[in-house]
Length: 143
Ligand code: UDP
Ligand code: MG
Image (cartoon, rainbow, N blue to C red; front, side):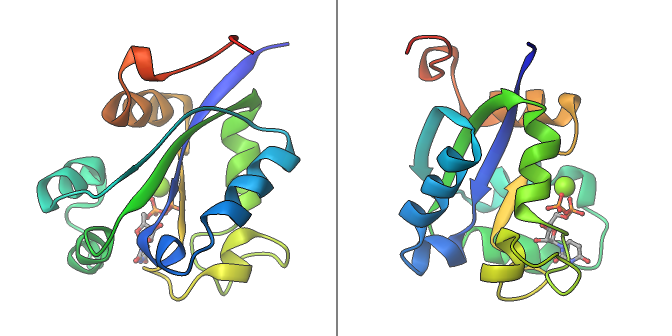
């Protein structure tokens, strides 16, 4: 069994709608172990750095403004195939394309305000986990 880690973000619109508990519960009943979690509010520079691969895209400014609009939940989810399974659970980036039953199909407000983030590869998961968590904030294999 190879455990994998992915970085999950519950974006500001979902936090504002008091849906944190519902989403976290969904993660747990789906089989993810939450091995790190915190609530934070990002500033412009932190969002720009997190999403730096998108810096030249037409939606970048809207994305940054949305992501600084309120607090978010960042969490590290652990399971076998965590990266792929988590992306499947949140659904397509475009909520109109997201399959029924996925989190974005159910809770997204728009393409930009699509509610959730999930790492898309092992490399990005490593960068994103290190971006938000120190080693002593990660609790793997302790319970
Ligand atoms: N986004 C957007 N318009 C687009 C594509 C992306 O507003 O046409 C936003 C959306 O919030 C998305 C984020 O930018 O979640 C990052 O885009 P990416 O392509 O990495 O999608 P994700 O990995 O989040 O599914
Ligand atoms: Mg992405």
